[in-house]
Image 1: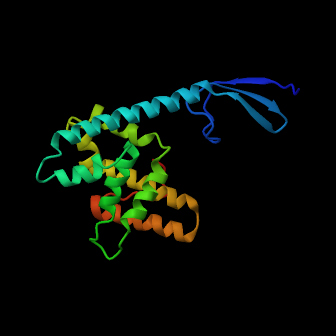
Image 2 (image 1 turned 180 degrees about the vertical axis):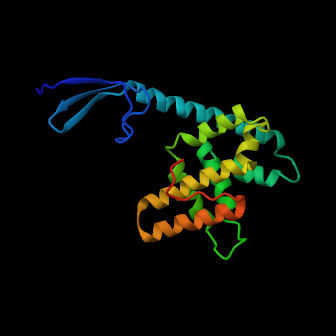
Image 3 (image 1 turned 45 degrees about the vertical axis):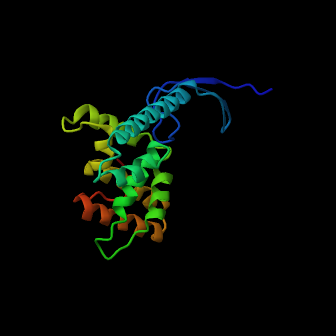
Length: 199
């Protein structure tokens, strides 16, 4: 049996990415080896995010179902909201649909964009936080559906996060993909955020 010091950590270690805010974790130290004994608070935070995102998705679906028979919006609502099974799926569908529009000479394939969006946002708590902040602070925001479907600032920030994930890969090819996404964001929403920026 190994013995070692037990540490109770209640501080933020941003550089390691292991702890955020006041998440409490107990760890056993053995030289340079750390074995986790339990991260109750971190699990709780993750569960809260999942619950929040599931609630936002239910609200989104409910709002979408109320206007799904609209002649003008119905097809987009059915494809981009009701055809998805999660909040990240909806956001990825909406963002990829807009980024793939062929208004410039650079065509970005929608199916690959959607996969990239899902990959970039699947474990990210910020999209749900962004929706909650918009609904809480923006007097023009009347619904979750409006925020996800029509707020260009929300779209630009989520697309920038996708671009940032490509930039972080580090290869010249992935950096050019990131710059192509940044270019589309600029064309569509008149927002320029470098892919290396952390939002």
